[in-house]
Image (tube, rainbow, N blue to C red):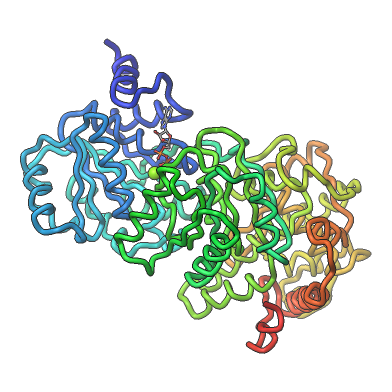
Length: 554
Ligand code: ADP
Ligand code: MG
């Protein structure tokens, strides 16, 4: 029997599937080759199988490092139900259970052993005595402080390759951010790992971004004909999960709040009721969902804007895992942006996180296909607009912006992709400020190429180019602007670019929001103020508000 047919048989016998998902077989074969592997696959793409099947195929026990206790337990339960010998070990288990897990590990009869990174050192001596088939590092982005779920204990995982150089390591994540990928490979000490990147496109998810005004009313309207459907509302704070869940309940919906402040028992009960369709609606903080495998979640609402695009993508990705249509709604309000800014202020990675937040905000303000913007963030190019997002459903008016796009790309080329948005605009406009002159940028051939366009308009057009995947921001160094392969098509291969006329954003927002309230005009003024400050301070720049002005807004 060939390796491939043996793998297909194991897939059928243990998991009941006939075919592999994209990249699964290649990844599995790579692991079986003894090579180190980095598998990047969207949430729900089927990462677990990529180490579970090699674990079944190979002799010995696979050691799986996994960040969340709930996630470990779910996977072990599912494996056990499929007749696979697996157990887990973490500090929250009762002593007797821990002992049992260690005994099982020592016996060498387990196919998979799940362990929390914090507990790994407790089993080190046993690991030296047994046969290990492979190490799997699930949710591997937790190793990187550049990722969105940094877990300090993950940074110790570098010792695995040092102690067990012959044992293959497979790291798995849904974070496609290039810098995070590099960081994972470096920290795990596997510079020669083969990288497998799957498409991040989830065509069945409808992407909808709406103005954040009257959210409750909008949600109630949205839920009207979704009575039996499962869905998740993500909120920023524990308090708002509870108050929103209470409001939904009093409106007659079966809903529960979920956040890290609840007891472990409560949390697993709520989770179970959701999985069994007893409670169709969960109002949660981002503590809910990592690794939750429920295939029929029909909608996800972001009551507040997530702090970056990775988080947004992960959270909407919890819907529609069965491939059937699912609806995602992101409520966008400037007040959320301000609150999110406060969370990161003073943290060691502040500038980096602020830049990612700014990118999230630009996504929310996009005037072109959402999916194109989303995928381009993950380094993928969408050839045609998706037809399955709010912008595609109701597009703004566009003009041929090819020439302007060429000017922008040409300036970025001549700046050798070293400069951030503010400087790119200054050079395009032929600004004479000290920073431009000091660096000699007035010598550049395309200096002043777009001096007829105002600073703020140029800023908006460049953001459109970002959202269309022509440009991208390199967050890890001063947010400099980079050209994507699409930019090269614009410069050299006659690709056309449509830009939206400016001042259309409010129209789009007001489509979902009937009345223009006082808040809108205040928000518009604040946005303008932000843009002006951005111009003065370079980008990213933000406005800081007093509590009083904030209270006015929310
Ligand atoms: P990820 O870890 O990438 O988010 P999971 O490993 O939890 O995804 O898998 C998501 C779902 O896809 C699970 O229900 C899993 O059983 C299912 N799945 C995985 N591989 C296949 C396959 N080859 N065919 C059908 N379903 C699959
Ligand atoms: Mg997973």
